[in-house]
Image 1 (spheres, rainbow, N blue to C red):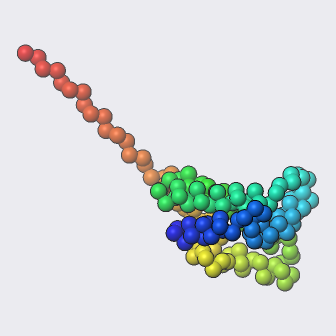
Image 2 (image 1 turned 135 degrees about the horizontal axis):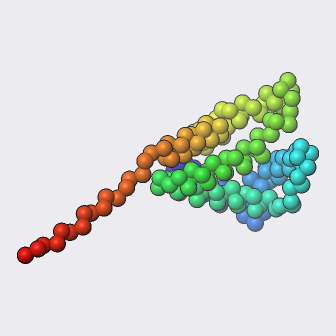
Image 3 (image 1 turned 30 degrees about the horizontal axis):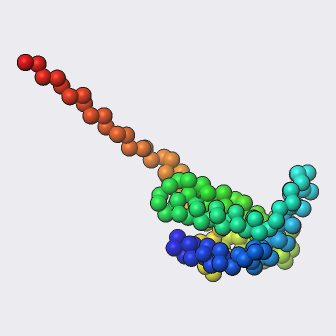
Length: 155
């Protein structure tokens, strides 16, 4: 988790006024995702500045990591939301046929370790967060014991 916080601080320092290199890399992928979404569902994705998407991703990941470190299930839900939003945008293997070369390049990146700075793949992290939330919800909560009312002395 410390590596994640370090990566977030590095991306925050690179952010600048235009979103930094993350925004430049995300723009074509977001355009492909929004066009795919609108052709498949008919839903038109509103125009959004990419730097705001990058800032929202940094905020979700940063706040989620902090809450997760302090054993809050809210942090796990925020990280799960981050993963659910970013995975379809970053790894658009669904646009390619299984026999195509692009699919063979993108799908392993999705299922295996994809970035140098992360120890888990995106799919494994998604599953681990679901497991954590399930375990957190299945554990019984501690109930405070009610102190017995003091007995009145009769004299």
